[in-house]
Image (cartoon, rainbow, N blue to C red; front, side, top):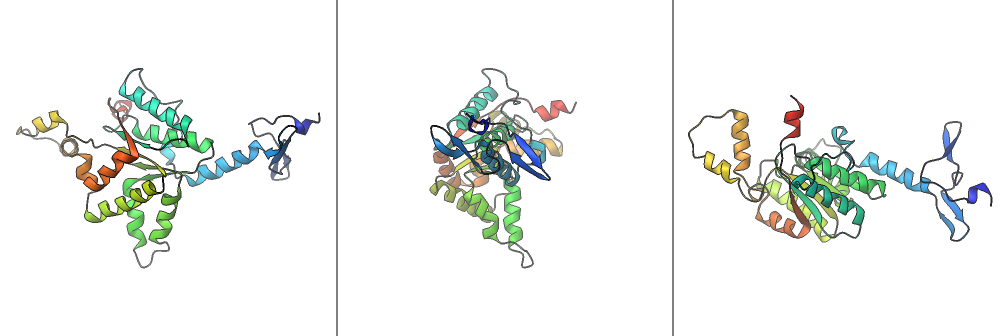
Amino acid sequence: MVDHLKQPTSNQNQTSQGDIAICNNCFGTGTWIDPDRGAVPCPCRLHGRVERLERSARIPERYRNCLLDNFSHVPNSSQDNAFQYAARLVLDYPAVDRGLLFMGPAGVGKTHLAVAIMRGLLAKGFACLFYEFGALLKEIQDSYNPVSKTSELRVLAPVYEAQVLVLDELGATVPTDWVRDTMYQIINKRYNDKKLTIFTTNYLDEARKEAAAESDSSRTFSRKANADRIQELTTLEDRIGSRLRSRMYEMCREVKIDGADYRRYGAK
């Protein structure tokens, strides 16, 4: 059997001709001849597609190396439970009908897991998109400027079309009627189109009881402490509205994560 009929590997074997890299399996045709199945797509086609998808996924540079393999978690902890849900979603997708809502305080790994899911699905050739909640709203608002070179539709088109959307820091923006209506429009359309959405948020469905008890005291706190306390006394529904929160019960499985803020301890 000639060499180019052997099963190609998933590694990108290439020969350079000038400035152009040629696949040694398919010789640039994108098709490999299998003796039993005939013409089949060469692995290099998936490799090229994955590279294109990663470039358009908008993963922030800070999180570009977030993978399931390097997520730190202790067995039988809430972080381990969240890891298991994330790994299962990557394994089962696209046979998945609900996304995930990672809930918990800052620095427990919510965004790491959300991006790790993206990286796992991108590697399988699925189109994913990352947006921070506030940044998406700002881009939409900026599109209303008469001198803007973009439009609301141009901003929202990839958000609507992505097979998997990660919406980070849900509820981080001050909740105005416009914010709530806009987010409901986006998320409801993805729900109706059966597109998977993964959320992260620092807000829970119930105010933390210990924070509520402390709020009755007369102690003076720093601005940072007061901000943290306001967050602890505010629910996710307070931030995004009851209509959108209700929709998300159908769209997502809630995954609560506890633990110390690794950013705070890592900085010491």
